[in-house]
Length: 522
Image 1 (cartoon, rainbow, N blue to C red):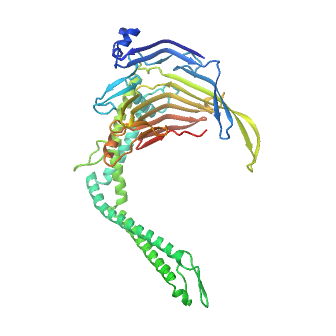
Image 2: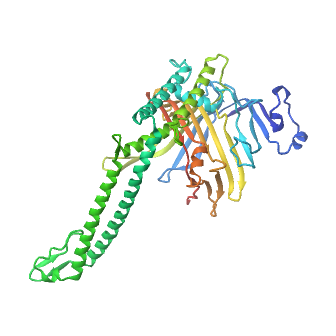
Image 3: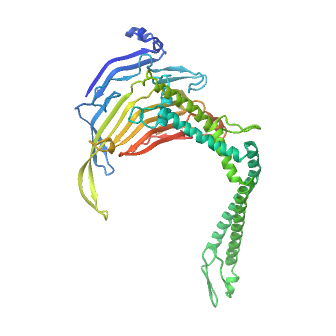
């Protein structure tokens, strides 16, 4: 195992903002005089390579409590372009002008800490140019789809073309809705509200009818259990299936039985209430199918919700389109165009990221089973697993910590980007036999200081608990308007040589979180 580092600088936060030429090392006496200013640090020109050394992970067992040997056959951290660790490319974490910072920060607009409070903040290097702003570049890379510089992927405006097409499709949906409803969503909404009053009334009738059916069913079941299994005179009458009435015929003792009469009457009551429920449900369905200008209420309500999604909540006396998906996409268009323009500029370059990889072998017992499920001989099997990141960056991320009576509070944003993520289950195979994801972007946000701070606490039994409060009726409007969403996107995913295209989870938000550790028995 080898470790090479040429420079490691750790500076007082008060010096972070100075020009690089003005930076100098501090001796112990000078460092002792610094209090509460925080730290700025970067790592310059290093590499890590496991090389020929061997590492093992022991103590792992399978479900049969058998030992599983894990050998780490390779691991490396190097600069981008190392060709998966084969070249000794030097790595850099931050720069003198863009260091990692750790220190106290006071509240100001835009910071995700409580108003009028102070927090301990760890922040990764941050750049303002569009190519090195992870959020902007990650958005561009998703629409670009392919890895820039690969064969057939040399036009950065490809992303612009794709997002413009998406915006055009959204505007077409909007225009179709406006045409359908004569450009007047205010009238559409008033008609929906008027018809929904009937729906609300009939929903209440259905709820009442359902409650009556349930009550009558329970009563019928109780009367059924009280009724005799068989009543005999010259002939016998047997107890029928639940929901069917006794057929007493000429059996006088059956006709005169109080238990039989009570049960038969309960069947009539249940059947009558079931008929009433069916009628109520039909009336509710009819309310949803009331038409205005030839369009049913259910369709109008769906169309209005779609318009709000596209153009934002409507208010006042005029139809507007000043927020919603269209406005957000228009802003994204501007961002993508900004990055594409910078990529076309020959002077625009990305800050070098890291190449990180680890390869492992699992040696474990394996039992073969035949077609009838009988166990055969147990042999030893070796499995391989590796994962590698190319040009990985964590720029623009932060973690804020502060405390209150409930425990340690936190808010965080992880901005992670990698040119490639490669996962393999074979030791010596080409990429065509692996999972290869390109333009991998994780925009993960947890904890809003004002509406949903994450809390790390310790339960009475010693378990660690990470929680975030749920949305309430009182704060749901502000919550959904202000709490940051999370996004995960992959420009292109290839599995064993088959392209499955771009993948994305966009607009993810945690409404409630409660995660805790569990102390498993030994």
